[in-house]
Length: 347
Image (cartoon, rainbow, N blue to C red):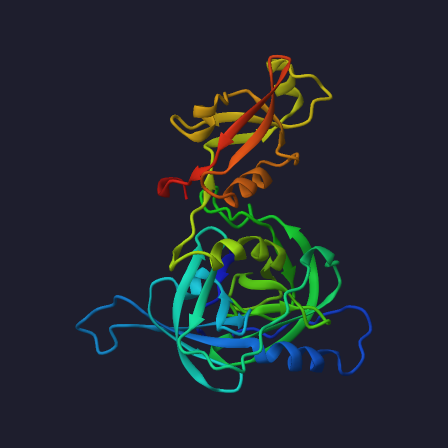
């Protein structure tokens, strides 16, 4: 039986038991403190979707997801797939109070979205956003959310892996602009959009998917690093209600191997990515980038993985000029490319 990549916003039936977790010794109140400090910021999101069969007695389906408050104004961080296509959003706070919600902004490839409470109360408790760059494999973490509609459920586990690349689970057309935190903390349908927190009660990840042959948790859960989310927040917070654009320059790259170096007369010590395709009429071609150019640096960064480079460009804003240093026919050139909005056909 093959493994399936499961986004987690839809309720289902529990079929598997959680796997055991291991980590450093804990004091008895460690997860109690996480529940007390992070729990009040976690919300349950009920979504009534648009569409459906008008002749049916239940023409619209409901699904549950999770989210968490990031300010006292009622701004909630969640996954885009939780609220995509929503006709009505109902938010339940940790203390049981209910409010209508509205979509604010989202990013299509990162699967991050902001929603806001209508008429928010003045006593909201936002979560503290931590630093996912400080995570270590084996570190204890907790997931809080609404699995199968069960509000404010906390599960514990460890960081199973960091910087997990998604190419094994996504097609080239759907690769997101980030890697994942992998965890064995039990997350299930309904946990999407909820926080993954460390023992300092800081959110270090946004729970987004599991890989499972059963459709329920088997210990392979994945979260978007909170630092990736924080990079997007200024753009999302400043946007009117809409989907935030994805950056694009129109190139395809690959790693250099010995055969390519010989055939293209590329020096052995040269490090970079070979451009194998340049989209006609795209920003890179308009700037003078050509196939067989070797990208040495992008701004002040170097890249050795095509996925990382694609992820970098997806996070850039339309209209931004980026200096790309390339190697072409034994010469080094610096070319400024203006980032464009990624065409829908390329997403």
